Image 1 (cartoon, helix red, strand yellow):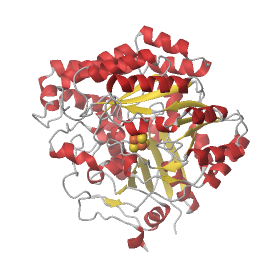
Image 2: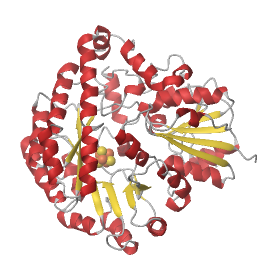
Image 3: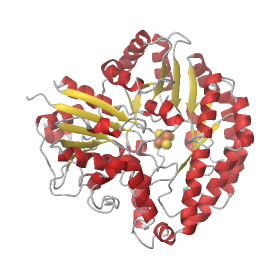
Length: 521
Ligand code: SF4
């Protein structure tokens, strides 16, 4: 087989940016799967150039690579950048392949702009692609394995890529590890709820931990499990079997249901420095926070006590909330969140808006059937800024007014001062302050305020979010044009409007095919 030149690009952000937080922290947000694809390609004997884009790198550097095959991993909010890049690389004769969350959520739309679009990907599928690929300029081919791979390449194999990422970050370097796929909980907005829970091989995890400790003194490891510690004793036994106490700092996203006091004590003993539990709502998802049927202020009090207990052991706790759910009504969800901030002052609150990403989650179909999805250009679909549905119990304007008010409360000088003082560890308290003063707090407030201003001043913007027209407002087009810079010229016509496949054949196009293990054998 001919030795191929393969370029792998992991898009973490959608525009050039000088933000301090992005510059110092975003290279720690890389995805693991592009690195695994890179290892598989190398093991097949090909030459791989792996790059990331966090907003700080020069786009021209990413485009200079002359490759036979270009893999781009993209979120939905980076999709227009991915489409423009694909168009550019195709003009230079490359075959382009899209992977990542956008490929799973909007395969039909992406097939218009890529030669291949990958759903769940395993090694067999990739081998098949590398051995037999072609240009599919009219309509790309959708390929998907029937399930997540049962084993993946560990840190040792990915190390060259991890080192390359670390060169982009002089401040804090996090090593990405994963111990499980999927999640047993069924949060109806979450793509990981669609993937069966699977614990990965603990032998490989042990080997990776030993390897990392030989490379770096006192490393910092981020667990990429959607929900860390579902098999709590198994993973903690694994860590304790190789990591001496205090030798490694860990970060993990973990449900409150796992975070009993004995478990939290054990996490502290083993160097867990940051935990990110999802609370989501004061009216739903009680199973994963172990609050059962408690709702409203009762749930606020219970969770504040729980979070304060965690924070007495773990220095940094980020609590994740979701707004725009159909159970939200009036000002109560926002006011309850303010009470929580008062009762658990040290926790950093992270807020997301409900975003419906195509066919990423099966229940999305109900929003499409009810005609509630607002067809924002992908570029603007960041769950921190954009509610892309018509809310059930609010006008869009009312909803944004409540949400901005909550953000102003959460990142007021008083709340930030209390948070700063409540956090005893030097590095976390300064990171949280930096985040609050940039994209996490004031940056988010100013961007949401400008959305509200557009809504109030621009009739075409209002008509769009009220579902009276699908015509993308000028102000949104200008935003995409500005952010893409020179790549705007390469953005394919019409790609600001998208093709929704939820109600039709999920994988349209005569050349599309769904591959599973049986059909490939
Ligand atoms: S608990 Fe977290 S990872 Fe699991 S389905 Fe819910 S949001 Fe997703």
